[in-house]
Length: 540
Image (cartoon, rainbow, N blue to C red; front, side, top):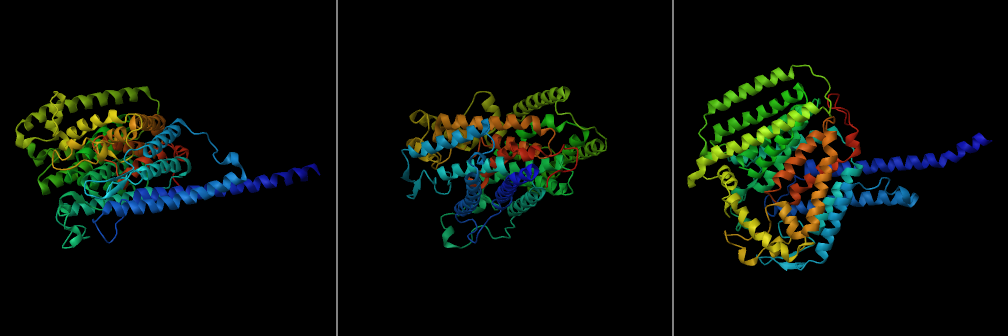
């Protein structure tokens, strides 16, 4: 009788466990659907209006799928809490989650106390702190959606190979559309024609590319795509690895055609900081060289076809030199990938020391290169980013540097003391910016062109501090795990690239969602559970 009673008493527990397991499955599906939309569909999404109010149409699409996902997650979570309240949240929040919750709270307080809750912009259009500026839409709602994306991805996402394969395919499509546009082939008819709606927007063909729009947004996307696709190719043994290689190479081509300096900065900084990961063994180093070879190949082709390179007309290096470098890189890649290697040891002190030494060497060489190449820009007609960097190194900082970014930053800092604690409210930079400083270079400024300065002005020191703690905690969690994980290393490279390029770029819902997905993946325990990178690609 005792045994029968024992079996009967466990039956409700088994049913409850089965119910919770089913809830977990639905949470995983909701999170997977969200990540798929952000990585693969949102960047590609267009409607029949083409480039006309592109940001608005993508924003509406963003709001629709966020509402669907959040309602689904809330219903499942509510059912769990009703059955057993203590299981609503089964794990205590970590530092990274407390930091982002603090960021959300500060952002909410900033919006509620904003002196610019409802305003009229310089074009006479109404704006609000809740939605944000017209054609920006980076207000409170968007910021809270970002936090939700991170929490859902961090808690519930279960990695699936097909999603990253589809991301590679999506990246290839986006890059091809943009590349062909640069060569005059707008086969999707995205550029304006004689449509009366485009009368005041007559420069789309100068500043808009692919399905992303403004070249600043293109710069953010290609930086992320180059690194994510590139390191997926390096780390994975999947049969789809060449999809990622092609995706990385084509987005590198698009980056060069778009002259995307902030994207270049992100890729260069990420590649330098990833050196300790790249030198983990001969196979990984060899595949890294194959990746770099693909970049050199498209760069050489682009130089041949378009007669420009990373330094514009300021370098006169012959095409033959690029071909020699490409051949040497391919030969070395073949030799390294043919070497049989042992499974790497994540805590190998020799590799860490070698990696740090190589990083220092690269930084030193970069500074020397800027000093030498920057001298060629002393002629005003040749002035460019390398020349500007050299001048900054010598303490000569001018307002027009960085396409007037120095001017924007200098004047934005004048607004900080007016609302230093929680800022002026999300996406209110235009109104916080000194009114007499607008139009100095022929246009008003509604973004700081530096995401960290943007947060400092709009959400104050508390908002920026919590955001930086969030980024730092994410990196601290990810670094020791990335060596032995097949997915964390590519995501970490993209994460580093994004936060580097953000120093010179703007945040918009079209691409900023990528950062929050990357951060969520880096702290996701389902991702941590993947097998070692030397084994089979262990994603369901």
